[in-house]
Image 1: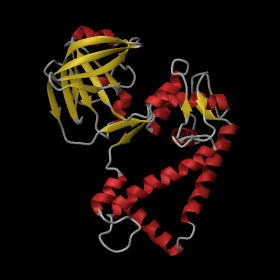
Image 2: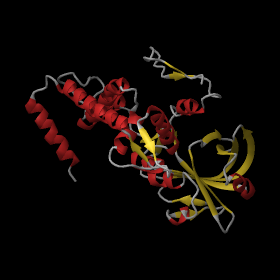
Image 3: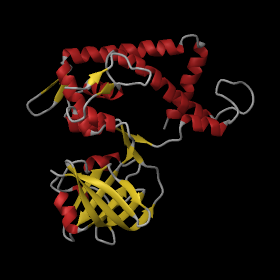
Image 4: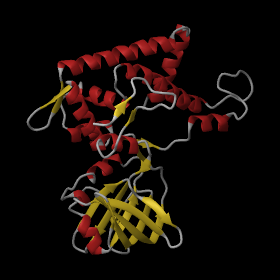
Length: 324
């Protein structure tokens, strides 16, 4: 193991550093810092359909119109895409997390569970997606344990909607950065300034949420746990679950969940049954209690000095906004 961990992040914020050839999981975590969209790549031979969730999709060229994606050499679908010679790409919308999970692993009835339309080459294009690309196979290239596929785009369609994102092992949605929101709402006024054009209330909510989440990272780091780990711990506090169930309920990538569970097993925080159902150990439940205690301590520290009547008014406003 050549991965080295900094006891405390340096000025550059280093969390881990190592040789990816010796620690593939650390390599995957570093790759996870790059946010991507989520696509479903499909192909059909006229009688059967194949589909898989892919986040390696990328633009290659405008002239000619080329895109790329990659597939594991061990995938049972690799030869099917090469043999058919064409494929469709559906870019998922922010409300299609379940669709991503459906195509994350091979299942025989995937296409019976979603609405789709056959494209010009007969490949399924998923309804409710925000973009479609219909492609013919241009070239394939060996890429280590993956095959890189280049497609020539025959037709593209842009639809209304916001994209589903994937970064740091979890799903996300695209929103304007809080600083952009605040600047757009009141270009010459900072949130704390008095008078003048004030930022929109919703912009302040977004900025506050991001700021508070960032501040709480310090409390999590005291327990040597990140935001993904805390979500897994919190979910398992309710009931035992498999990695796939945790992934679905916590909106996390299954590979990320498996890595987290492996780390937690090594720490003695979780245990697994013979059928790979995970549950918290006594040590894991202690970590969960420490997380809850830290959350209470953090909340108390952040709200200290604010007039109780102001807090009660803010609570009523937030509850009103959350009401159906």
